[in-house]
Image (cartoon, rainbow, N blue to C red; front, side, top):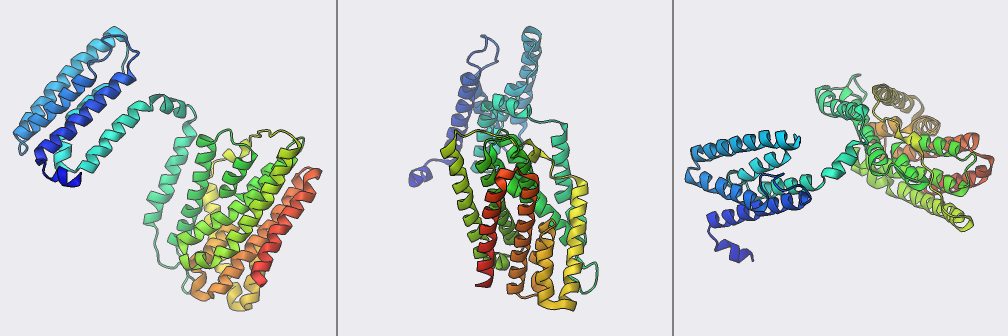
Length: 423
């Protein structure tokens, strides 16, 4: 097939591409508006095909000056303006999608010659897709409110505006800490949290307990544990809630492993068994608890709306940045004055707080003054401390019926980490 194409003249091949794309765009317009009244559109398959051919011919007449092509474009634009005026008067429809598509079809030829076929194909596919998903876009837009665009704007400001402006030089001599590194850590965690937030709110708005645990674990396993524990009161799905709590912790390991690969692949590779095995064991425990609910009663769907909280609040980002800087200085101080044992004790204690700032500091700066084995031990100890505090949270806020299985599930995961750490 490739050899056959080589024997076709370039102009003929480009003409056939324009012809095919224009015809398909016109056919898509006919199918999309097949239930409209006669005369509602200015044209469909034949009209769009002829518009594409006209653009090709006028471009080829004078590809250097483009005067014939521009004159033809102005002529088509005037015709479309007249059509639009009459159309709005007769039908009261003020949409201009078909008009824009007609102008894009007219521009296929110069796009094909001046750029490349891949870009032309991308434009063609975009036209087809955007026309076909009109109703889906309307449905998707109904889920938005003004806060969503503010959230997106915040994310762009955090990552695309502030980060490039920050200096990379150390703030304090002798400590591997710069404003750029602090904010980069904020961006990394915010990106994963934002992705989880988008998936939960727009892709899986009616997520049940298990899916909520997966998405919530990517955002914050601690917050998800507290939310599910509170939901356990008065719910019949006790075992499924316990399964969700343990599964959120499994997702914590995967989230931290992803962050490790982003910041330091050497540490990430070393952490693979210490994170993947507890995550797998946690998933097995979660599946065991989930099956107990399925065996005892029909599955019920439980929505957990609290996980829709906005993950990009500026105050949250600033607090995270402060904690990252604080743990960076504290880690350097503890290492200098108390050595390895001090770092390990600090790692275990840090687990009762948000471990992300501490762990990210180790991913970015740990190898500058610590061995990779000490970094790995410290990260694993931090996750153990965090699992202990999550277990306590679940006991405090959860229904009394979930306390024993929660303790059992967390102890299995914690014991797995300890075995890996010491043996």
